[in-house]
Amino acid sequence: MILLRILVIAYEFPPIIAAQSLRWFYLTEELARLGVEVHVLCPEFSALEAFPFAFNNKVTVHRTWPGPYVALSQSLAKKIDRSSSKSATDVIQGPSLPQKIYQSIRKILDNILFPDLRTEWYFFAKKCLRSLLNSYQFDALISSYEPGVDLLLGLWAQKKYGVKWIVDLGDPILAPYTPGWRRKIDSWFEKRVLERAERIVLTTDQIRPLLCKRHHLTNPSKFACIPQGFPHHRFSTVRTDFALPRGVMNIVFTGTFYRDFRSPTNFALALRALKTNKIMTTLIGDNFQFISMFEGINNIKFIGKISHFECLAIQNKADLLLNIGNIQDYQVPGKIYEYIGARKPVLHIKTGMHDPGA
Image 1 (cartoon, rainbow, N blue to C red):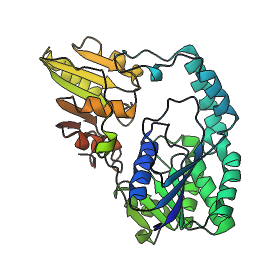
Image 2 (cartoon, rainbow, N blue to C red; image 1 turned 120 degrees about the horizontal axis):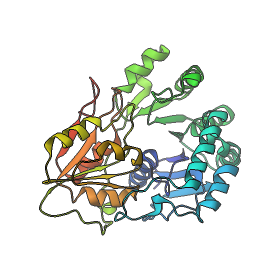
Image 3 (cartoon, rainbow, N blue to C red; image 1 turned 90 degrees about the vertical axis):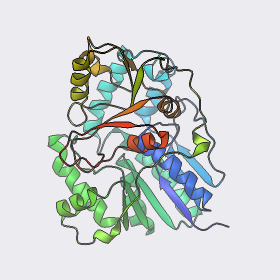
């Protein structure tokens, strides 16, 4: 029996491995287990490795062309040896020349298209979205943010079809990393989305007062909090050949450092002061730019980006899991919940005064 039928607009959805993508993979799985019929509208990413798990039979995925730039880059990516395709046994290398060219062009296009390059998917997704809304009676439409193109499509669908629109806001639209020249535009767009959506889903309650104060919202009851989580046993079965060394305490970090709001500076200083060979630190993720910060420290290994499920397997082998808190006081990284799911001790380094992750 179908309890509800919902449509999720999610640019980031498997096989993409990113926080919002994994969030909606897990949420669609759990909704389907409850009897909800879920449809997902997302782009086609043929160049990425196949996702290791099948979707629930109550989840129907509708994939469309992602747009000219991403489609072209995908066709070229198949011919390029990328660090993201390496296994957990490979030590991290810097970005290749094709990667640097791709990243530079994408950065330019991100500043031309609003909110970013992924908006090129809008017209191709809208065609499929119109067909779906004409073919099915959905109880709700959900836009997953990021990216902003999911919100643009939701705004159009609500205006054109009068659907009940829910926004899953992983982060505020106006965020610390928003370029200075675009902050007024993003603030206007954020206010419009918050006013038009029937419900706003947040990953942490700390964002609610921030958004209400920023935009003078008088209906805080439209907000709900559904935090991140960790996978149940069906998704914890992926194994990895990566072996942590024996005879030392293994500290493992999986994720990305940022100089401006999630810096490993204090952790590096602490390791340097310890001067010990009894600790092995393995840092997994796109953190090439931080290698110089750890030069001269014993037993440090940088590994590039690997699959999410391989990260989960390595977390389960660690003695201690490292987490660096964000400076901003309204974000709880999904990694914290993954760490809880691994059932291992967590070393959390608090960087902000009111870090909710702590």
